[in-house]
Length: 227
Image (cartoon, helix red, strand yellow):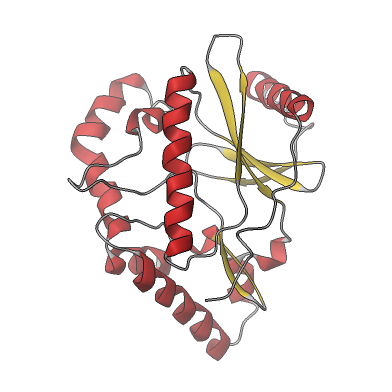
């Protein structure tokens, strides 16, 4: 399967640049003034912002300490390696972090900034019916080659880029891996922290497993992409 060169180097984000970016995002959150930021897109819990017109940076939920960050880092890069083994070409990805004043850590998923014209929704919108069917068929092939009970994939169209060489997968910040016992390897509390505290326990106990299960079933993944 051809696609984005997942082995290509990620452009470097220096510690000074990271500190500046983190301060700009804190300012935007505190004041509502995002004039210093170029927002590329919004996800369920975070936004992706451009840095110096060459990087796309997504701030993750805050980490309480280095132990929690190390566990996430291990899960993330295991996921990247697993996707590569399954033939899923991932856009080159780095994880950068810095200390915060409250003693925790801010972390960012960093990828090269790619032209908006390469995003799958734009490609499909400009495609003929036959071209669109071929593009979606290629996505289904990727899903069938990758998704198993221990390996999940969020194949929504906005998570992909495409050019003449093939596909590239963008959204890896929620590593969808399960262990031999079927337990999620990702620390769910990290991402549930963005919810009001009264809802966290309810969502974790009653809803989270059902939400995630579809990403480990080829049919659920394809239906989600169609939706």
